Image (spheres, helix red, strand yellow):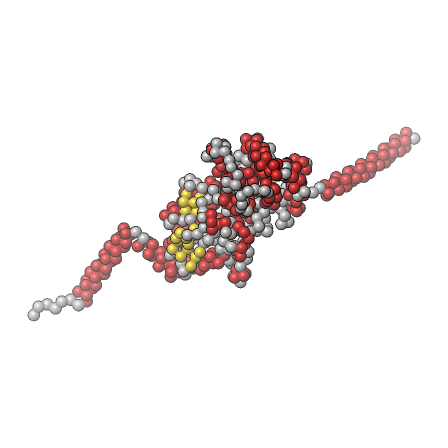
Length: 466
């Protein structure tokens, strides 16, 4: 009996454990279902689903590029927009923004445009502004609108003072301290440091009402100020801004290098007919020179205006320094992320990275007045173009330089032409090499004459005198 009771007790215990296991599994399944359901409904924050839309135009730079050169993508003295808002090292200029806002609004209050008008105008566009950023901006409406108004009015006031639209104090540290303005202009052209152009246009229109003098358009005013970053003929550049529609200041400056609106569409029908093995590179500057291609400077107001014709490669002067290198470094990620724009700057830096493989290439381009190196040593220029072309997805067939790449490689495939050019480079490149070649040729000629007479004497010995 006791044995049977023990068996029954064990059976009951096993049944209870089985019931508990079933209940536990059911509870776990319920928890999993709830957990998965919650996660399925979560929307991506760091890269929104709407990032692929044309409205999204302000992006975070990929971590792989940041690891190569972090300073190029992070603002040094001023934050614009939400990505770097509140950073401790940017507080110095952040304090001055309120001073500039007070100055701008103070001029408008007398004509009935008060601070509320600025905030209402931007608040009505809040959702549209948020859609311009690739990340979800997790700040409330009041803080977000305040940020847009403060940063936008700061930029407008800076542009107006630089353009002499409004008077400014010559002792203002922004203009009196020589280091501040270049850093400021550089920060305004960083990809992560942008606000939409329509925000600036809205604030600009409000702030320019009832002014006595004629005010140039915002695009012209911005380009005149940003042209401090790079020296170029402003009158020719400003003629091209009328037909462009930028999405922010970085895009405005980028578009000002493109020669005509027709060039905005890089797709070339000729490229579609080319063979699948389209050249992905061209030889370096020194190799092109050895191959017989003449490389010379081209007079143009745009860096992108590169031509190749009849064995002559013409390249506009590039004065490379911290400002233009920072612009390139921020423009390439923008063109990589924003699908609704051409890839002109990416094409240009890829072309230059092909030309520049060694310090000798930099020296050669400098000798041809194609490059002015204000960046550092020739090795640093090589490293810059090497780094900027890393991890770049680029289709050469869709580049505005596609035909140039094809023609240059076609020239280099002409073996007789290349061999003759190499011969001239080897033996006639310098006076000393020419003299050495001439001496060697004369020595060879005299040796051949000597051999000829030796053989002639052996074959046709002189007759002995009779």
